[in-house]
Structures are given as structure tokens and as C-alpha cells.
Length: 374
Image 1 (cartoon, helix red, strand yellow):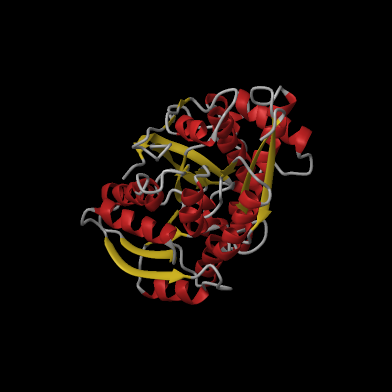
Image 2 (cartoon, helix red, strand yellow):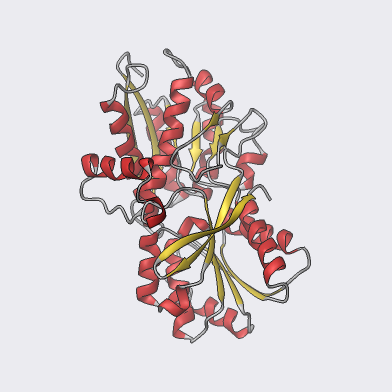
């Protein structure tokens, strides 16, 4: 940090199996440039440096050390990926470097905050999302026969654990298959899940594998009810899924949402959505607004700017962590009724979400806000 700049950094999968998430950093960078153009934070310009770890935890460790020890970042921001964040958790806590608003809702980060206070997630709880899905199935289709495809990681395991808790004995989990992020395809897993004669399929998967799962089910002529993880529902991802499968396979999918969908007609006159489009046009003109990971990137950047401002005119890492653990924020990028709230004992910034259903190329909100804690 200098009298005129404040440098933050993070790792992002710009390449590799989770490259779709790379747009998150692009959206954040564009928002920081917008803030800089309007005076920065307490007169300092935000310098945001992010490195491509290709979704590989070993690279996350290497590049995080580079950011801290060579780039001398003041704080880390939005490390993308659950296992990636967990791989550096010990390091950032030993160094007392804030790693704020990590791109994960894994329970380990929030639950172990007393031991690892320098890392905070941002997404709603993965366990909570699984619970939401399970409770809905128990209420709407209590005799469902359920098959699960999940990433063999803390992310996928948390979602599966939450699903089982939410079902509360309703429905029947007839099959489950995991995949490794390094696999080329999940066709064999989908075939085994179909053989279980399940009528409901849970895709606790990142975007590339969600697309492969839709395509695999379609090839087999299997058309179950599908629930898909909220990390994979950007409209551009779903558009590819429809092209690789059929509308019959993809339409009707259920997920949860917590940000406004800038591609939906429901928000076409919303001031924040208009701001999103204007920021992209000015600072990332080649980007496609359909890529909602860009929008999410702005949402999480908004919260980071808020924390930096609350850290004071002459911030320290301690004051930034104190600010991040005392938030009560209305973030205009989020759905109405969802607030960012934290405390030294509460490391889940978001505790509510809404269900969405995919129909004719659009995600449509339905129902009321639901507790996303699990």
C-alpha cells in the first residue's frame, strides 16, 4: 500500500476445467476501475492483480505466495474454488493476510473461523443449498427417486451432505456418482445414474461438467427432473447446455439464485443492472453481458470496496479484517431482501436465496426468500 494506491490480489481459473469462473475476476476488475474513476477508496486507487491457477490447488499455493511475498499485496480477494482456498488457508492465517470473500460456500471456511479468522467466504453455504434442494424435493415430490452427480471435493460433498439432511427421510437416494475435476467426461457416471431408474438428477457440478452431464443424459434419452448447483447457472452456460442437449433436457431445471440476473427482462429497468452494462461497455467492451459471472464479480467487488472503506483512511490488515467481520450491507447487485451481514462469529455473509426455474432460455424466480444456512 502507498499513499495513492492499495493493492489486492487473487487467483482465478482463467484456463483449465473451471475456466468459466475466470470471468469473475474480469467483472471485479471492471468494477474496481469504475470505483477508481470516481475517486477510489479514501483517495487511493485500487490495484487488482490476479493470476491464473487453472483451478489447480498446487498452483493456487504457488501464486498466492507470489502475490504476498513478491507483489506485496495488502490483502487477498476472492480466491476462486473451494479446494483452492482450503489449500492456502493455513498460509494466509500464518501470515495474517486477509483473504476475503472467497469464491466458495464450503462449510469448513465458515465453521473453522475461530482457528482461521483471516479467510472468509462469500457464496451461500453449499450445505445450505443442498438442504434447500432436499427440503423442496421432500415437499413437492416426496416419492422422488434421486440420483446425484457430484464433484469429488469439499464443494460436492457439502452439497450432498446438505441434500441428505434436507430430505429428512423423504424421497429415496438411489444412486450417487462422483467425478474428479481432471476427468475428461462424465458419460459413464451419467449412464450408471440412469440405470438406477431415478426420476430426479442432482448436478452438484461446476459449469463444464454440468454441461457434460446434460449432454450425457440427453444422449441416453433420459429426461429426469434436474437440480443444478448455483455455481453453474450463468445463462451463457445454460445456453451451451441447451445446444449440447435439447431444450427438453434442460428446461425445467431448478437452482437457487442470490444475485439479480442482468439477462432477465425482470431487471431490464433496474438501476444496478444498467450500471453493470455501462461499466462493462466502458471498461470491458469485448465482454458479453450474458456471462453472469461478470456480474457476480461486480457484486463481490462491491462488498470488497465497502470493507476497504470501512477499514479507515489509513487501513491496516487488522482494521480490514475488523471491517469485514462487522458488515451489514445492502448490496444493490443482490436480490431484494438479501443482505451481506457478518460478525466475528458469523463468516457466512449471505444467509438467504430464492429458487429459480429455467424456462425457454431464462431463469425465472419463484417462491419467497429461503433460509440458505441449512
